[in-house]
Length: 370
Length: 261
Ligand SMILES: Nc1ncnc2c1ncn2[C@@H]1O[C@H](COP(=O)(O)OP(=O)(O)OP(=O)(O)O)[C@@H](O)[C@H]1O
Ligand SMILES: [Mg+2]
Image (cartoon, rainbow over all chains, first blue to last red; front, side):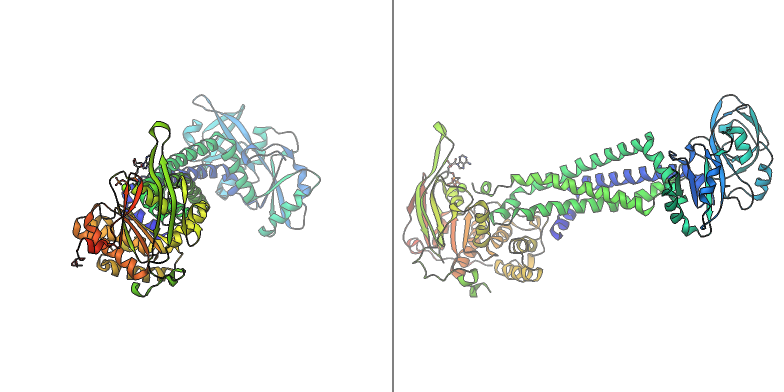
């Protein structure tokens, strides 16, 4: 390893392209994933900002914003000793008719509004909740006015021929798809018009939050097919749904694969060229009877060191760009993501090393005798 | 130090000097190409080499010197013939066995220096012990220090090939061949790229290895000024081997001149 390190350092100019290519791959993967994670964390905002411990939905529910009607009566399944109380949750897409003309798809979210409500997002202050208890009143994020074609609190618009009025705003709840409209259960029912006695989700709060996984496991055993999740599970489930089932996830995969391919080609070409440049030296070692695997280890060690250097080089750049990028879009870089990006990058570097091994086939000691 | 090392250290039986050959080659032929363009590089070459002797192989360009060296050292398969060392036929072994045999018994010096540009003189030598014999870092370091001392390179141990003169580089290359204390050393034109002063030093190092360690050393060279320094001369002409003058040192009536190293 130390010979590989000396070589890498002494001939750093030769190895620089490979290190930079690895750094580039790592950067691309980490930032792409971080950006998408930031983007998709938005899709689970209504889950993360509620106070529910458990979400129960239709068996086929793929994501929080794609709920399907279930009977409110299912609440009885949740009459368990660990469960403190339950409540229905209404949610669905609807078309918002902009006063300025045109339509906008919006996500209507109706919850109970009392101080002990489980579904209402934490940003709804007691004042806002009082205002929302008026029929047909809604709260939106302060950044959504333009998208909805209105100017200020107090403006009205039509959703499927029903007039609604904006009574207040919240911060930091912009959505990925349609803007969120927060309202009361009654308002949501009026807009979405579900079959009688149906809601979209049933939320539950446990006496102890730590009991939630146990309750969920119990509900999964039910003969009646439910789709129960703890809040954390449901949040991840929703994000992953968007990640994998949308084009964004595919785009991420392609971009990352492209970055990896570039990194792999440059790295293996560099290692190959470095080995070929030392063919005569390796040939002497072979003449002296030093086994081939020692030389293979040298190449692999170099690959490892190139990978490691690349990752180290990429670190400050990743954080720098993420910091700057946060002004425009949310970039999330949890340790798991960074670890994953490093692991993938390192694997790529090591595979390049393995690929470069074929250069050792040209080591022929007899060519030294002429 | 190197003077106290004997053949026992190398795991070989002690041999009476110049009586029992350490290497015996019989009926070696080797050709290249086929049909009209077929060249016979070696024609029925037989020879014996003795421990503690440095043997010089001379001959015109293209006479087959390098080819013979390659066959004797297990790097090039002969068409016919055998190379016997310690009752083992080198060319009856598997590739792997031959590799292990070379590791245990053979050292090489080639015309080019063939040193890793990124590694120091010390690294180049240490590497052979670490990789070849799996020596511990400490052992390798000690042996390397001794060898650098013998080579007169102790003060230049930390330098890389680019910072070393041609003579110094060739001395490192010689150290690489000798550091395993091999029973046999094969050198192909080790002095060709050096001026006579440095070439002489290189030959003296090889000669010392033969005499002090009872190694069997075969050197290919053009320069007849080397003759006084060797114990025996072989001549190769058009693939046929002849024994050279009996006592080369006396024949040329020259004594090895002490160099200033
Ligand atoms: N790989 C090869 N392919 C074809 N012919 C070869 C090959 N190697 C050697 N020869 C031929 O074999 C003959 C002997 O070559 P060799 O290299 O042994 O000569 P040499 O005595 O070492 O010459 P020099 O003093 O120039 O190094 C030459 O005619 C050479 O052209
Ligand atoms: Mg030659």
